[in-house]
Length: 132
Image 1 (cartoon, rainbow, N blue to C red):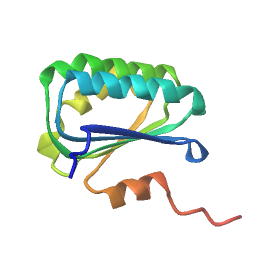
Image 2 (image 1 turned 60 degrees about the vertical axis):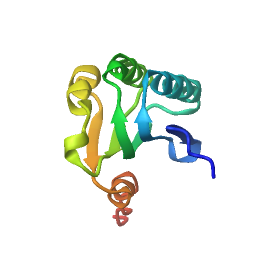
Image 3 (image 1 turned 180 degrees about the vertical axis):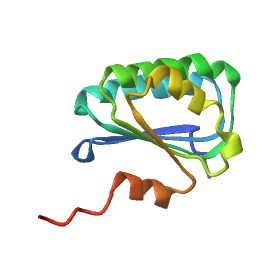
Image 4 (image 1 turned 90 degrees about the vertical axis):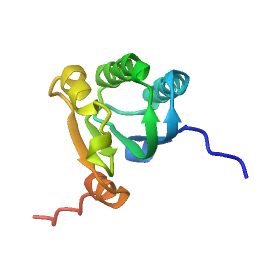
């Protein structure tokens, strides 16, 4: 059985959504590669797109990843991201994303942290409003 890569990126143009999954131990090389992959997908997204960052499988991330995460946040903001939904089951493993979000998104991006994938999908797929 082969181990899964420490990151995976998926996009869903019809939902205007990019998904990032981090798992296991993540280092600088993995964060840089994931950021480069996201940058390739951005032209496919429309302004106001959403990002789902699933950190539920993350064991650890090197501190040296912070500048690359910051760069990705700036790139997302510059390309019109509207919402970031994070899955972090254990709030003590936030890895500083809340602080980075304040600095790099500057209040222009809605950031929601969920504990489960089910909660995240409810945030991303709210029930339809009844017609008036």
